[in-house]
Length: 242
Figure 1 (cartoon, rainbow, N blue to C red):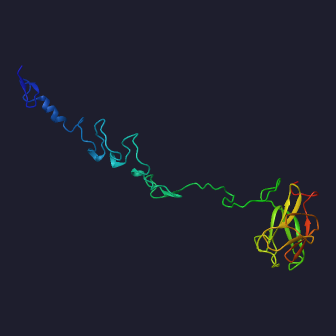
Figure 2: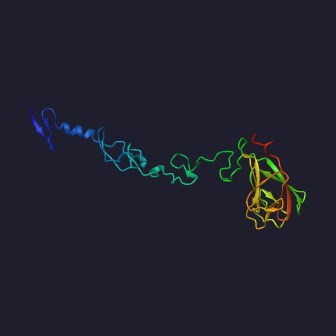
């Protein structure tokens, strides 16, 4: 056996091989299976990366940030940035939406006025929003003589303004808003009348009243220069809640 050593320090049999067989094998394998490259090499995607190699989040193929399972990024970062998603709309870029928008679900209840904070009169045993007439005031003397005014359950504010519960337009001695007040209590089944914010005196059967006073059928109430007769519908014999 004729043992020789090559320039790379490999030992081989000189009688069998004219050159170092190990060096020849290394030359054939160069660039083949098992060869390695730095991370992010071939194709820019790292498909031939060495086991255990790492790179920053967002690296790897196309820089899409999906190369390392379990690593995190700030919300809205990377290629799936939705632009903050504030307000009622947000772009869907990154989800294949092509700039389309998505709407957040409205929390309002269909068929219900979600912004109306007005209080409905109390009417036990009745349908919500059902406020039928419970009596009348009929003008027997004054500018609106012959007119009738419906009384509802609960408080009824009296004045010249259109939004008053009982609007008496013609009498200029009546305040625009809340001159007087008439109320019906459907629990005790009684009516009351009295002053509110008006400056002029109100009367029941010719007598000044300073506090709410119980009304009886056909009592005469004076508001401004108008005299009105009270006619009840509800009471002991009839009530809408029964």
